[in-house]
Image (cartoon, rainbow, N blue to C red; front, side, top):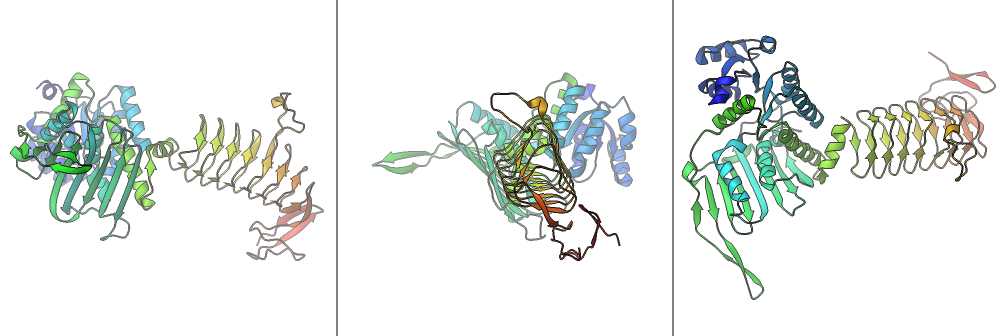
Length: 527
């Protein structure tokens, strides 16, 4: 096998699953080195399989080792694969490719830029029975695919570093996506945590596809017996891949039919037809496939892009699980990956280029135009337009039906009430272009603008100022000032905590004290 002769692979991680990779690459004549944080375990693997135990940095620096297989904890996959690709290595990563879609896409970009192979260990795509099942689906034996379900059940191995969805379901998601040939339109998941307050022990995930296909995945490590079964229902026949059965009966076809008699459906059952499949270890086939791809430059069956597709579905399922079964689209996940840590509703639009900080939420029907910078932990309500060329600080809240036009800058902690208005030209006419006359508006830290208030362009709203609902601001507003009316006039003072100050200038909310330093100047008294 040419791949085994040409490629030498170092295996990083020799534990529960990594030891199987070590064995297979050794038997294929491709094992170059082993590496594990447990030096004793690495030495044991070295002694057993005749490959040196080396550190990760040593392997990265060794140009005679062109490829690495990574079987570390999932939270380390991205960082380790990133460093390996950066060191010009071909990389095989056990599932999942990463825990974040943005990171997985970055690994895909790196692999494309460096011309290196990036492959994900979705083992069951290399199982001879699955390959035969996929052929049956492709050649029309089963007819049009209607429904699939997968059960992956066992009593243990219970994990604390990941829930059952991330531990068991990636293989099933990978198989279902390959069989349907597309990604689902929406994902719904429900589950329960019995052994730990927040780590799900059992989940059911439902996938809906644009072509009308449906699929569900039931996974649990709290089950009385082991079951690994995939059922595929087509118009002409049904197929069952039961990995718990002997090889001669792992794949079975049922040519059941439904006849309609007098308007009633009547099942016509057929005998089970075992499909012969030659026995071979799936992991051996997977390792050999990686070596061949490294040697020939071919694209792996489960390349980085396939790993990212599975991760999209996993993240959608987790988001649905966290929201008690809400249907989640993959578009929602893609938007979150585009702005890591932020949430952009599927009905909202964000144009490029734009920056959105982690923790920020952009809700229904809002539109962020180009050259906008939005900080962290902001809330952009429904039907909000921001930009172009607008800067919004951290922890700002913009309520529904607000347009933040070009030239407006909101510092940290600014609150904009529903339907408040920012202008950017003093004397607009529909038939006269005045974009070169835009005047800047600055809203300083902690200021509040009430509902339906209007801020005429070219003015500054001071720190922690408070503009009453319906006011029209046509002049600068001092720090801490409370203004109201048309045009807005100062009618009092407000504390940073949002309490109206009386004559004693003491905040009724937090007891902070203030003092006047001029006719229209207030400042806090430092302790």
